[in-house]
Length: 297
Ligand SMILES: NC(=O)c1ccc[n+]([C@@H]2O[C@H](COP(=O)([O-])OP(=O)(O)OC[C@H]3O[C@@H](n4cnc5c(N)ncnc54)[C@H](OP(=O)(O)O)[C@@H]3O)[C@@H](O)[C@H]2O)c1
Image 1 (cartoon, rainbow, N blue to C red):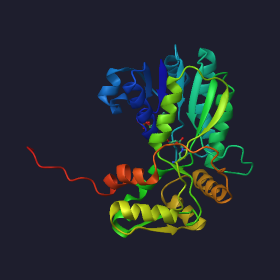
Image 2 (tube, rainbow, N blue to C red):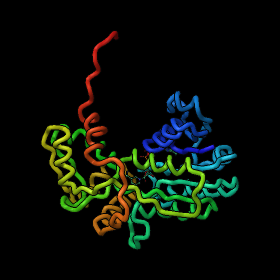
Image 3 (cartoon, rainbow, N blue to C red):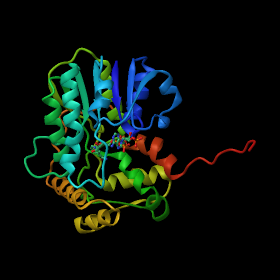
Image 4 (cartoon, rainbow, N blue to C red):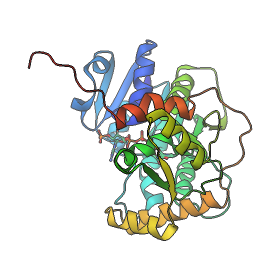
């Protein structure tokens, strides 16, 4: 039995679907099971509730051979690290109590960086707690999700622009969420690994934002430029989006750490999704949805 948290989220849904297709025995932990696809529910146990809840975890982890953990984003928390730990602590306790042999979690690249790193530091605090659970552990370590650009579909389409804090000419470490899910599913289905390891997940090539703009332009057939925003503007943007002061601080601190080189150079390159493939398969349909063909209403 493989237990999947956040099966309605971007990565969790892809992990669950990949394991379902492979015929794995699955248990899904979801706050609102009505949001799960019927095809998935037909082939899985479903436990209703949050994986921050010890009682839910107690039910979910009975007989579990592997567990996928993802801490949901929370843009209104008053303490970013405490938010991560509010999931990590009960999960670690339940893993220990049920003797779950293997745990795979989504963390962040750059672990080992000694300076403050905001959101990243909170994810690494989660790693430490999960590592203490007694299970074999894999910390999946992505950097920037290419899916973050989907928040900028409108400016890309309407103004021909996308904006980040990154240096236009410095390689941006990124990865498609499909590759994170594929890596997680592979580890969860494999009962042979032991010990604790960090597993970087990154695209085959790190493009600079200027190169990304060129690839986006070629894919969409319209000019799209990159605009570097200052950290002050970045902060203001998050403040006006309703994020809590703690989250705004953690996002800015993360951007500062990224500018300071928090991500190490790639030791091994994956054979995952290239940025051009991602633009073709994910960004383009989001920017220019295919019009629905007619039919009976
Ligand atoms: N974006 C990046 O560039 C980046 C980079 C590195 C790491 N990360 C990490 O990646 C993770 C985000 O993954 P994602 O994109 O797959 O997330 P997502 O699509 O936003 O999905 C969030 C999931 O969490 C569930 N959820 C929300 N609140 C919950 C709660 N209180 N208890 C239980 N479940 C809850 C949601 O389900 P319901 O709402 O249906 O209950 C949903 O399934 C975060 O941990 C983030 O720090 C992100």
